[in-house]
Figure 1: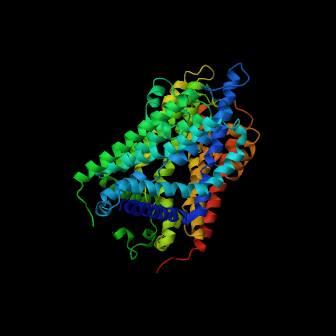
Figure 2 (figure 1 turned 90 degrees about the vertical axis):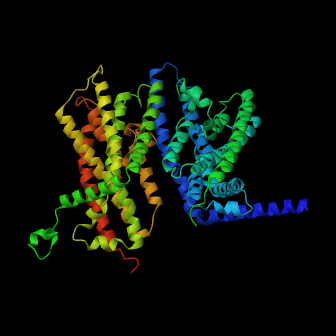
Figure 3 (figure 1 turned 30 degrees about the vertical axis):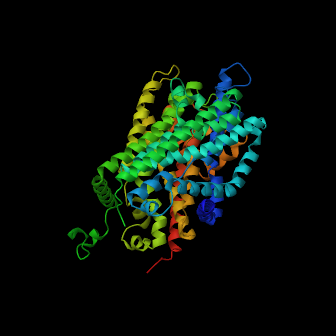
Amino acid sequence: MFTATIHNRLTGWWMVFRIALEERLAYRGDFALGTLMRFLPMITQIFLWWAIFQSIEASSATSESRLVGYSFQDMVAYYLLSMLGRAFSSMPGLASTVAKQIREGEIKKYIVQPIDMVGFMLLGRVAHKIAYYTIATIPFALVFFLCRGFFSGWPPASVLIGFLLSLIFAFLLGYFLDLCIGLIGFWFLEVSSLLFVYMLLNFFLSGHMFPLDLLPEPWHTCVEYLPFKYLAYFPAAVFLGKVDPSQLWFELGIEFLWLLGLIGLARLLYARGLERYSGYGG
Amino acid sequence: MSEFDPSQDTTHQRPGYLSVLAIFGRNSLVRDMMFRTNFLLEAVSGLSWALMNVGFYWIIFEHTTSIGEATGWGKYEFFVFLGTTWIINSIMQTFFMPNLEEFSELIRTGGLDFAMLKPIDTQFLISLRKIHFSSLANLVLGVVLLVLSLNQLAQRSEHPWHIDWIVLVLYAIYVLCGVAILYSLMICLAATSVWLGRNQTLYDFWFYITNFSRYPMEIYATGRGLPLLFVFTFIVPVLVVINVPARLLAQPLTPRAWWEWPLVGFTLIATVAALGVSRWVFQKALLSYRSASS
C-alpha cells in the first residue's frame, strides 16, 4: 500500500516534469539566439573596465593594477561567472505568475487537485532550467571558450565542488525568494510595481551589476548579511578563489540556513494566504 | 467639428501637424490621468533604475579618478554624460518607443490599414500617436544631474565650466540630432517587421545596439575596439548620439583634440543621412505591406 502511494507520487512528479520540459523545448532556435545576444552587453563591459583599469594603472606606480583585489582579467571573469550564477538563480516571470494566479483565481486548481503548489511549481522550474541548459550550454560554452584568456585556470577540486553546490543553492534560493514575493499577492492584489522594485534591488544587491567587494563600508557589511549575494556574487567569488577555503563550507552552511528559512516562510505565506483567499474569477 | 468638415473650405482638409500632435498629447494625458497612481508608479520605477545607475558609477569613481587614461571623463564630466543619456533616452521613451513597439502589432493585426487611410503622413501618425508622459520624469532627473555636475565642474582647476550660450545652443542641437539618429534606427527596425511578420527579438536588438552608445567612445579606441568604433560611428552612428553633445557640454570649448570638430560636423551629416535612409526604408516597407485579416 505504502509503496504504491510512493510509486504513484513519483510517476505524478515525473509527468509534471516531462510536460514542463517539452513546453520549454518548443522554441529552441529563437532561444539559443536570445541567449547569445544576452552576452552582447558583456563586450561594452569589457571595454569599460579596460578603460577604468587603464586610468588606475596610470595613477598608481605598480605595473599590475588591482581593484579591491580584482585584476582586469578577474573582473571580466567575474562578470561571466555572475551571468552563469544568474542563469541558475533567476526565475523569469515566477513571482508575477504566482501573483496573477492568485488574482485571477487560477490558484483554485491547487486546492481542488491533490497537488502541492510549492512543489509543483518547483518541479516546473527544474524542468524549465534543465531545458534551458540543454540549449544554453552551447552559447555559454562558446562565450566561455572565447573568453578563456580571462581565467587563470581551474580552481582546486574542493572549490569546484563548493562552486557547483553554490549554483544549486542559488537556484533553490532564487526560487523560494521569488515565490515568497509572488505569494504577497494574497495580501495585495496588484504587485507589479513591488515586483519591479524587487527586481532592481535584486539586480544591484546580488552582484550582477558589479562585484560586491566594490561597495564602500557600511554598505558592504549590510549586503553581506542579506541573502541576495548568493544569487550571483557568491558562486562567482567562490570560483575566483575570493572566498577563503576555510570559510567556504561555513558560508555554504549559512546559505543553507537562509534556504530553510525561506522554505518555511513560503509554506507559512501559502498556508496563511489560503486562509484569507476567497477565490475570485471562474 | 466643422473645422474638419470636407464640404467646407478645402484648405481646412489638411490638418496642421502641430495641432494633430497637440491632440495626441491631450488624449494621452487624459488617459494617463485616469490611472494616476499607475502614472506615478511608472515614473518612480523609471527613476529608481536611473538612480541605481548613478549609484554604480558613484562606486566606480570611489576607486578611480577617470574612465580611461587622459580621456577627460572624470567623475562630474561623466555625470554630464550620464545626464545626457537620460535626457535623450527619456525623449525617445516619451515620444517614440511606445508607438513603434506597437507597430509590429499593427502589421500583424492589419490595424495599419486604418493608419494608412488617414489623410496624414503614415510615418508621422504611427510614430507619435501616443505620448508616454511618465517617462519625462527621467528627463527632469537628467537635467538635475546636469545642473549639479556642471556646478561641480565650475570649480574645476583647469578650464572651470562657465555658462557659454554657444555651448548651450550646440548642446541642444546635438541632443536633437541624437534623438533623430536613434529614431531613424528605431523606424528601420520597426519597418523590418513588415517583412518578418513579427519580431520581438528586434526590440532586444535595439536595446543591445544602443547599449554601445551609453559609454564614452574613447573606451573602444584600442586594438580590438577599433572595428566596433568604426562600425558604430560610421555605419550605424549610435556612438555619436550621446558622446557628441555630452563632450561639447562637459569639456571646455577650446582646446579640443583634432578629431573632435570633424566629428561634430560628421554628426550633422549622419543625422540627415539617417533620417533620409529611415524614411526610404519605411516607404519601401509600406509598399510591401499586405493587409492582414479582412
